[in-house]
Length: 181
Image 1 (cartoon, rainbow, N blue to C red):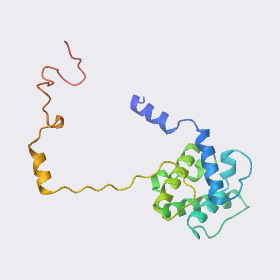
Image 2 (image 1 turned 30 degrees about the horizontal axis):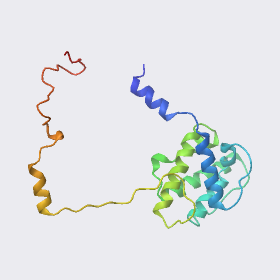
Image 3 (image 1 turned 120 degrees about the vertical axis):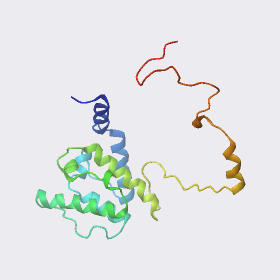
Image 4 (image 1 turned 45 degrees about the vertical axis):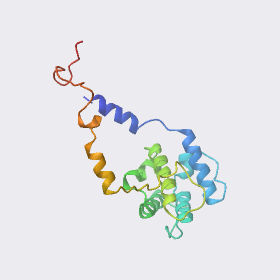
């Protein structure tokens, strides 16, 4: 039997597809490639991996050397594997890269979308000046404090240190008990 937390995690992991995000991803790919994509469903357009390989080659020229435009299913799946290797080298975290079967066998299309958003996010770390996808990455905001500023804060009590104007959990009982007032 699944715990409530496991059920919630499963729902989030396999949440329904977001057509708006898929449309945004396709529009971004078109803008990056500078050409119109063929008509069809999201997963059908990306399924053979050719467009994905062209995409990473546009972002990082020479990333995928050989692209199979037609052939057996195995040869087309190799395009997806080459794309995955190229985006990993480009900086997309392994956890955000979809499995070949997620796209080719349509097992987990939302994971494909998540991966392409991650790729769009990572382009901001490179010298890419073209269209972007997803939120802007945060810039580093390093702060430096003098020794006097650090010493001045040592005498302060804050709520994280257990002082809350006399309020406490004394008499509350164990974990899971309700408070009787």
